[in-house]
Amino acid sequence: MPPMTPTSATLLMTIAPVLVALVAIAVLSLPSEPTRQRFSAIFVAGAGAAYLGSGFGPLELVFCGVVTLLAYRGLSDYRAIGLAWVLHSCWDAAHDLWGEPILPFAPTSSYGCFVSDFWLAAWYFAGAPSPWRRETWLKKLSEFTAILQGCTLVALVCIAIPAQLLFNLEDAIAAALVSHVVAVAVHTYTVRNRATRDNWILGALVPFAIFLRGSVRDTSSPNGPD
Image 1 (spheres, rainbow, N blue to C red):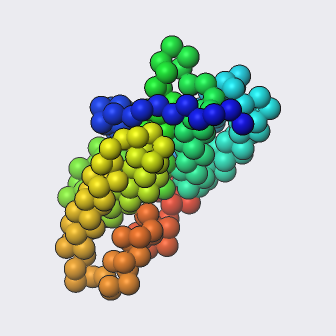
Image 2: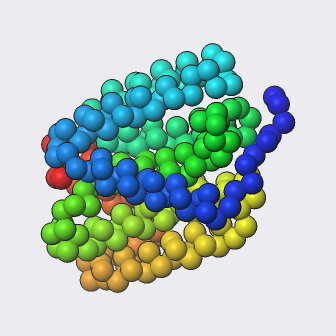
């Protein structure tokens, strides 16, 4: 195996991909269901082929095949699309460390995709809720804060820890941990009279646990709420 050549990450290099992911989520939310889910499956299938010829030889074809299968499953289950983006983010990190960047003219592009793809994955694991439906956020504040604490937990475990340990981003873990604690506190306040302590702990330690249990929405429904 060739030696690792990780990008030395900076705060700007990390924040910018998050903003890109938020813009992408806003755009992907525009179509109503089931068009949103179908397009999302096609989108992640195309992303799976982005690294063909980028340093890992036959493994690139294997990765593309796995993502394509997940994209097909994603036509009926958003969690499969979320898993596909998780794998793509891990593939981004691998290419930053050992392979070639996703954009040959931008050496830090794979690191940026590593960050942004996890945020896309978090959104899909939460059922791809539309940020354009203002009444949903106002009427279901506890649902919004559950999504928020899930995103901050993903950011802590999947982005901040490797960013600090592998990509030399100072204080990333501390910043992400504080963000998650704040998100958990806000969510706990919104459900203080409607949830047990066990549910609070589960939500704080398992990303989108409330959604994966199906207690808020059925993430496997292709015609779920917009």
